[in-house]
Image (cartoon, rainbow, N blue to C red):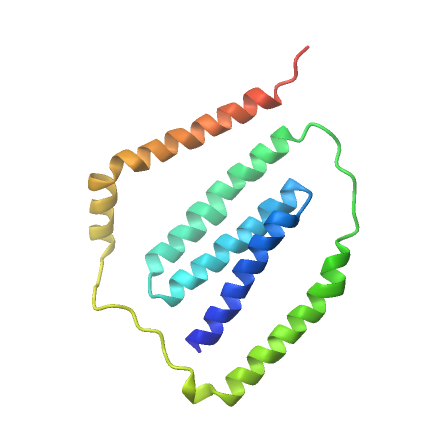
Length: 164
């Protein structure tokens, strides 16, 4: 079962990353990035890293993506034309999803006892140990990342400001 879930969410992650690159509108790219980040969180969950999976969803899929969408909407000075969806999604997306679902269902039903299980190491890391490493040993990179995000927001505000 782990292998099937891994394949589903790995394919979803790759499809979201490719969609991120090929989208014309930045909001659609940001939504594709949310799909990638959420798929990565599920992959972390399959590896047994529950804390990392929840941090991925809370920090990246939540806070950072809200920040990205805010900056994109702030920088988007012109009007955006309305579209009725992508033709690629209708032509390749729906049959592709149905084919992928059929293949995964057939593999799961025919090879259920041969799929195996995922196994992680013998290490048990508590949240306290993780927080000690994060806020003692890695405090400087953690804070530098926060400052870089703040500088990026200020840069977006300066670029979006209209000159009179």
